[in-house]
Length: 321
View 1 (tube, one colour):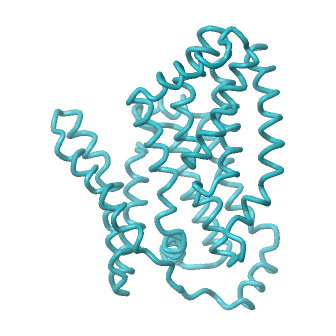
View 2 (cartoon, helix red, strand yellow; view 1 turned 180 degrees about the vertical axis):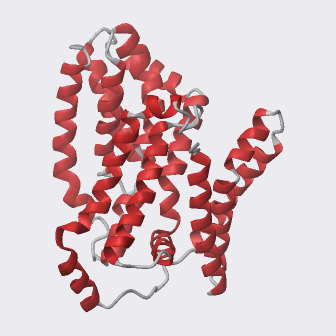
Protein backbone atom coordinates (compact mmCIF):
# COMPACT_ATOMS: atom_id res chain seq x y z
CA UNK A 1 0.00 0.00 0.00
CA UNK A 2 1.28 3.45 -0.96
CA UNK A 3 1.08 6.03 1.81
CA UNK A 4 1.73 9.75 1.47
CA UNK A 5 4.09 9.48 4.42
CA UNK A 6 6.57 7.54 2.27
CA UNK A 7 7.00 10.52 -0.03
CA UNK A 8 7.30 12.94 2.88
CA UNK A 9 10.04 10.68 4.23
CA UNK A 10 11.83 10.74 0.88
CA UNK A 11 11.60 14.54 0.80
CA UNK A 12 12.91 14.73 4.36
CA UNK A 13 15.93 12.61 3.33
CA UNK A 14 16.72 14.99 0.45
CA UNK A 15 16.48 18.02 2.73
CA UNK A 16 18.59 16.28 5.38
CA UNK A 17 21.23 15.58 2.71
CA UNK A 18 21.17 19.29 1.83
CA UNK A 19 21.68 20.16 5.50
CA UNK A 20 24.59 17.72 5.79
CA UNK A 21 26.35 19.14 2.73
CA UNK A 22 25.97 22.66 4.08
CA UNK A 23 27.30 21.51 7.44
CA UNK A 24 30.40 20.03 5.80
CA UNK A 25 30.94 23.35 3.98
CA UNK A 26 30.60 25.29 7.27
CA UNK A 27 27.50 27.16 6.16
CA UNK A 28 25.98 26.99 9.62
CA UNK A 29 22.74 28.92 9.13
CA UNK A 30 21.81 27.06 5.96
CA UNK A 31 22.65 23.74 7.60
CA UNK A 32 20.47 24.57 10.60
CA UNK A 33 17.61 25.82 8.43
CA UNK A 34 17.49 22.67 6.29
CA UNK A 35 18.01 20.37 9.30
CA UNK A 36 14.99 21.88 11.09
CA UNK A 37 12.95 21.66 7.88
CA UNK A 38 13.87 17.99 7.42
CA UNK A 39 12.89 17.28 11.02
CA UNK A 40 9.51 19.00 10.61
CA UNK A 41 8.64 17.19 7.38
CA UNK A 42 9.96 13.82 8.52
CA UNK A 43 8.10 13.87 11.84
CA UNK A 44 4.81 15.28 10.55
CA UNK A 45 2.79 12.06 10.79
CA UNK A 46 4.04 11.39 14.31
CA UNK A 47 3.22 14.95 15.44
CA UNK A 48 -0.32 14.67 14.05
CA UNK A 49 -0.79 11.26 15.68
CA UNK A 50 0.34 12.53 19.07
CA UNK A 51 -1.87 15.61 18.76
CA UNK A 52 -4.87 13.41 17.92
CA UNK A 53 -4.06 11.31 20.99
CA UNK A 54 -4.29 14.39 23.20
CA UNK A 55 -0.59 15.18 23.56
CA UNK A 56 -0.07 18.81 22.43
CA UNK A 57 3.67 18.97 23.18
CA UNK A 58 4.98 17.70 19.79
CA UNK A 59 2.76 20.18 17.92
CA UNK A 60 3.95 23.00 20.18
CA UNK A 61 7.57 22.00 19.53
CA UNK A 62 6.83 22.05 15.80
CA UNK A 63 5.52 25.60 16.19
CA UNK A 64 8.74 26.61 17.95
CA UNK A 65 10.70 25.01 15.09
CA UNK A 66 8.81 27.13 12.56
CA UNK A 67 9.75 30.26 14.53
CA UNK A 68 13.36 29.04 14.50
CA UNK A 69 13.20 28.84 10.71
CA UNK A 70 12.22 32.52 10.64
CA UNK A 71 15.27 33.33 12.78
CA UNK A 72 17.67 31.34 10.59
CA UNK A 73 16.32 32.44 7.19
CA UNK A 74 17.69 36.05 7.05
CA UNK A 75 21.31 34.88 7.32
CA UNK A 76 21.12 32.42 4.43
CA UNK A 77 23.11 33.31 1.32
CA UNK A 78 23.08 31.77 -2.14
CA UNK A 79 26.26 29.70 -2.51
CA UNK A 80 28.41 29.58 -5.63
CA UNK A 81 27.87 25.93 -6.56
CA UNK A 82 29.71 24.30 -9.45
CA UNK A 83 27.73 23.66 -12.63
CA UNK A 84 28.52 21.67 -15.74
CA UNK A 85 30.50 23.63 -18.38
CA UNK A 86 28.37 25.57 -20.88
CA UNK A 87 29.65 23.50 -23.81
CA UNK A 88 28.62 20.29 -22.07
CA UNK A 89 25.15 21.63 -21.30
CA UNK A 90 24.64 22.81 -24.90
CA UNK A 91 25.78 19.45 -26.26
CA UNK A 92 23.36 17.64 -23.94
CA UNK A 93 20.51 19.95 -24.98
CA UNK A 94 21.23 19.35 -28.68
CA UNK A 95 21.35 15.58 -28.14
CA UNK A 96 18.07 15.43 -26.23
CA UNK A 97 16.17 18.06 -28.22
CA UNK A 98 12.48 18.30 -27.36
CA UNK A 99 12.75 15.17 -25.22
CA UNK A 100 13.93 17.55 -22.49
CA UNK A 101 10.26 18.34 -21.83
CA UNK A 102 9.22 14.71 -21.32
CA UNK A 103 9.94 14.53 -17.53
CA UNK A 104 8.14 17.83 -16.91
CA UNK A 105 5.10 16.74 -18.94
CA UNK A 106 4.97 13.38 -17.20
CA UNK A 107 4.20 15.05 -13.86
CA UNK A 108 0.72 16.45 -14.73
CA UNK A 109 -0.08 13.45 -16.95
CA UNK A 110 0.60 10.81 -14.28
CA UNK A 111 -1.07 12.94 -11.60
CA UNK A 112 -4.29 13.16 -13.63
CA UNK A 113 -4.25 9.42 -14.37
CA UNK A 114 -3.84 8.58 -10.67
CA UNK A 115 -6.68 10.96 -9.73
CA UNK A 116 -8.97 9.44 -12.37
CA UNK A 117 -8.20 5.94 -11.10
CA UNK A 118 -8.26 7.11 -7.48
CA UNK A 119 -11.47 5.34 -6.45
CA UNK A 120 -10.26 2.00 -7.82
CA UNK A 121 -6.80 2.44 -6.29
CA UNK A 122 -8.32 3.17 -2.88
CA UNK A 123 -10.82 0.29 -3.00
CA UNK A 124 -8.11 -2.14 -4.12
CA UNK A 125 -5.91 -1.15 -1.20
CA UNK A 126 -3.07 0.32 -3.26
CA UNK A 127 -3.61 3.75 -1.67
CA UNK A 128 -4.53 4.40 1.94
CA UNK A 129 -8.13 5.49 2.49
CA UNK A 130 -7.02 8.44 4.63
CA UNK A 131 -4.47 9.73 2.10
CA UNK A 132 -5.03 12.37 -0.56
CA UNK A 133 -5.16 10.72 -3.98
CA UNK A 134 -4.12 13.97 -5.65
CA UNK A 135 -1.04 14.43 -3.46
CA UNK A 136 -0.03 10.79 -3.89
CA UNK A 137 -0.44 11.13 -7.65
CA UNK A 138 1.69 14.27 -7.70
CA UNK A 139 4.36 12.70 -5.49
CA UNK A 140 4.48 9.47 -7.50
CA UNK A 141 4.63 11.44 -10.75
CA UNK A 142 7.54 13.52 -9.45
CA UNK A 143 9.54 10.42 -8.50
CA UNK A 144 8.87 8.80 -11.88
CA UNK A 145 9.83 12.03 -13.68
CA UNK A 146 13.16 12.12 -11.82
CA UNK A 147 13.91 8.52 -12.77
CA UNK A 148 13.01 9.20 -16.42
CA UNK A 149 15.22 12.31 -16.44
CA UNK A 150 18.14 10.30 -15.04
CA UNK A 151 17.62 7.61 -17.68
CA UNK A 152 17.44 10.15 -20.50
CA UNK A 153 20.51 12.01 -19.29
CA UNK A 154 22.42 8.78 -18.60
CA UNK A 155 23.18 10.09 -15.13
CA UNK A 156 23.73 8.03 -11.97
CA UNK A 157 21.12 8.07 -9.20
CA UNK A 158 23.15 10.32 -6.82
CA UNK A 159 22.86 13.08 -9.44
CA UNK A 160 19.25 13.60 -8.35
CA UNK A 161 20.34 14.31 -4.77
CA UNK A 162 23.16 16.63 -5.85
CA UNK A 163 20.96 18.62 -8.23
CA UNK A 164 18.14 18.71 -5.70
CA UNK A 165 20.55 20.13 -3.15
CA UNK A 166 21.78 22.71 -5.65
CA UNK A 167 18.24 23.89 -6.40
CA UNK A 168 17.25 24.03 -2.73
CA UNK A 169 20.31 26.08 -1.81
CA UNK A 170 19.77 28.35 -4.82
CA UNK A 171 16.15 29.06 -3.87
CA UNK A 172 16.89 29.18 -0.14
CA UNK A 173 14.05 29.98 2.26
CA UNK A 174 11.77 30.93 -0.66
CA UNK A 175 11.34 27.21 -1.40
CA UNK A 176 9.12 26.95 1.69
CA UNK A 177 6.92 29.96 0.92
CA UNK A 178 4.02 28.09 -0.74
CA UNK A 179 3.80 25.65 2.18
CA UNK A 180 4.01 28.33 4.86
CA UNK A 181 1.59 30.73 3.16
CA UNK A 182 -0.97 27.99 2.56
CA UNK A 183 -0.80 27.21 6.28
CA UNK A 184 -1.20 30.91 7.03
CA UNK A 185 -4.44 30.96 5.04
CA UNK A 186 -5.78 28.12 7.18
CA UNK A 187 -4.80 29.99 10.33
CA UNK A 188 -6.58 33.13 9.13
CA UNK A 189 -9.73 31.16 8.30
CA UNK A 190 -9.72 29.41 11.69
CA UNK A 191 -9.26 32.72 13.53
CA UNK A 192 -12.39 34.24 11.98
CA UNK A 193 -10.87 36.55 9.37
CA UNK A 194 -13.37 35.22 6.84
CA UNK A 195 -16.30 36.33 9.02
CA UNK A 196 -14.77 39.80 9.34
CA UNK A 197 -14.34 40.01 5.56
CA UNK A 198 -17.95 38.91 5.05
CA UNK A 199 -19.25 41.58 7.43
CA UNK A 200 -17.14 44.26 5.74
CA UNK A 201 -18.19 43.28 2.22
CA UNK A 202 -21.90 43.11 3.03
CA UNK A 203 -21.66 46.57 4.58
CA UNK A 204 -20.00 48.05 1.47
CA UNK A 205 -21.54 46.29 -1.54
CA UNK A 206 -25.16 45.34 -2.33
CA UNK A 207 -25.18 41.66 -1.40
CA UNK A 208 -28.27 41.04 -3.53
CA UNK A 209 -26.28 41.87 -6.69
CA UNK A 210 -24.62 38.89 -8.36
CA UNK A 211 -22.22 41.11 -10.29
CA UNK A 212 -21.08 42.91 -7.15
CA UNK A 213 -20.51 39.65 -5.26
CA UNK A 214 -18.56 38.09 -8.14
CA UNK A 215 -16.37 41.19 -8.45
CA UNK A 216 -15.82 41.30 -4.69
CA UNK A 217 -14.81 37.63 -4.62
CA UNK A 218 -12.59 37.69 -7.72
CA UNK A 219 -10.86 41.00 -7.02
CA UNK A 220 -10.58 40.05 -3.34
CA UNK A 221 -8.74 36.87 -4.33
CA UNK A 222 -6.31 38.92 -6.41
CA UNK A 223 -5.79 41.55 -3.69
CA UNK A 224 -5.29 39.04 -0.87
CA UNK A 225 -2.88 37.05 -3.04
CA UNK A 226 -0.87 40.20 -3.76
CA UNK A 227 -0.69 40.93 -0.02
CA UNK A 228 -0.01 37.39 1.17
CA UNK A 229 2.01 36.13 -1.79
CA UNK A 230 0.06 32.94 -2.47
CA UNK A 231 -3.44 32.10 -3.71
CA UNK A 232 -3.58 29.15 -1.30
CA UNK A 233 -3.40 31.61 1.57
CA UNK A 234 -6.09 33.87 0.13
CA UNK A 235 -8.52 31.11 -0.87
CA UNK A 236 -9.82 29.98 2.55
CA UNK A 237 -10.26 33.57 3.71
CA UNK A 238 -12.15 34.82 0.65
CA UNK A 239 -14.19 31.65 0.23
CA UNK A 240 -15.26 31.64 3.87
CA UNK A 241 -15.99 35.38 3.79
CA UNK A 242 -17.61 35.89 0.38
CA UNK A 243 -17.77 32.68 -1.65
CA UNK A 244 -19.79 30.52 0.75
CA UNK A 245 -22.21 32.98 2.41
CA UNK A 246 -22.90 35.31 -0.52
CA UNK A 247 -22.34 33.42 -3.77
CA UNK A 248 -23.07 29.79 -2.87
CA UNK A 249 -25.70 30.08 -0.12
CA UNK A 250 -27.44 33.31 -1.13
CA UNK A 251 -27.18 33.18 -4.94
CA UNK A 252 -26.86 29.41 -5.51
CA UNK A 253 -23.49 29.45 -7.31
CA UNK A 254 -21.84 26.19 -8.33
CA UNK A 255 -19.24 25.54 -5.62
CA UNK A 256 -16.84 23.47 -7.75
CA UNK A 257 -16.67 25.99 -10.58
CA UNK A 258 -16.43 28.91 -8.15
CA UNK A 259 -13.53 27.29 -6.31
CA UNK A 260 -11.54 26.42 -9.43
CA UNK A 261 -12.01 29.81 -11.09
CA UNK A 262 -11.42 31.57 -7.78
CA UNK A 263 -8.03 29.90 -7.40
CA UNK A 264 -7.13 30.68 -11.02
CA UNK A 265 -8.10 34.31 -10.48
CA UNK A 266 -5.97 34.39 -7.35
CA UNK A 267 -2.98 33.23 -9.37
CA UNK A 268 -3.26 36.46 -11.34
CA UNK A 269 -2.25 38.18 -8.12
CA UNK A 270 0.72 35.82 -7.81
CA UNK A 271 2.03 37.21 -11.10
CA UNK A 272 1.88 40.76 -9.72
CA UNK A 273 3.53 40.61 -6.30
CA UNK A 274 7.09 40.46 -4.98
CA UNK A 275 5.61 38.64 -1.97
CA UNK A 276 5.56 35.55 -4.20
CA UNK A 277 9.35 35.49 -3.95
CA UNK A 278 9.74 31.92 -5.19
CA UNK A 279 7.99 32.87 -8.44
CA UNK A 280 9.01 36.47 -9.03
CA UNK A 281 12.26 37.20 -7.16
CA UNK A 282 14.17 33.91 -7.27
CA UNK A 283 14.16 33.83 -11.12
CA UNK A 284 15.61 37.36 -11.09
CA UNK A 285 18.47 36.13 -8.93
CA UNK A 286 18.98 32.98 -10.99
CA UNK A 287 19.05 34.89 -14.28
CA UNK A 288 21.11 37.72 -12.73
CA UNK A 289 18.76 40.42 -14.06
CA UNK A 290 19.46 44.07 -13.30
CA UNK A 291 15.80 44.99 -12.65
CA UNK A 292 14.46 43.15 -9.56
CA UNK A 293 10.90 43.59 -10.86
CA UNK A 294 11.61 42.51 -14.45
CA UNK A 295 9.64 39.28 -14.09
CA UNK A 296 6.61 41.09 -12.65
CA UNK A 297 6.70 43.70 -15.43
CA UNK A 298 6.77 40.96 -18.06
CA UNK A 299 3.82 39.17 -16.44
CA UNK A 300 1.63 42.25 -15.92
CA UNK A 301 -0.30 42.15 -19.27
CA UNK A 302 -0.97 38.42 -18.92
CA UNK A 303 -2.15 38.83 -15.32
CA UNK A 304 -4.60 41.64 -16.10
CA UNK A 305 -5.96 39.96 -19.24
CA UNK A 306 -6.41 36.61 -17.51
CA UNK A 307 -8.07 38.28 -14.54
CA UNK A 308 -10.66 39.96 -16.78
CA UNK A 309 -11.41 36.70 -18.62
CA UNK A 310 -11.71 34.78 -15.35
CA UNK A 311 -14.18 37.28 -13.91
CA UNK A 312 -16.37 37.02 -17.03
CA UNK A 313 -16.20 33.21 -17.01
CA UNK A 314 -16.95 33.12 -13.30
CA UNK A 315 -20.08 35.26 -13.66
CA UNK A 316 -21.30 33.14 -16.58
CA UNK A 317 -20.43 29.60 -15.44
CA UNK A 318 -21.15 29.56 -11.70
CA UNK A 319 -24.81 30.44 -12.28
CA UNK A 320 -25.25 28.42 -15.49
CA UNK A 321 -24.49 24.97 -14.03
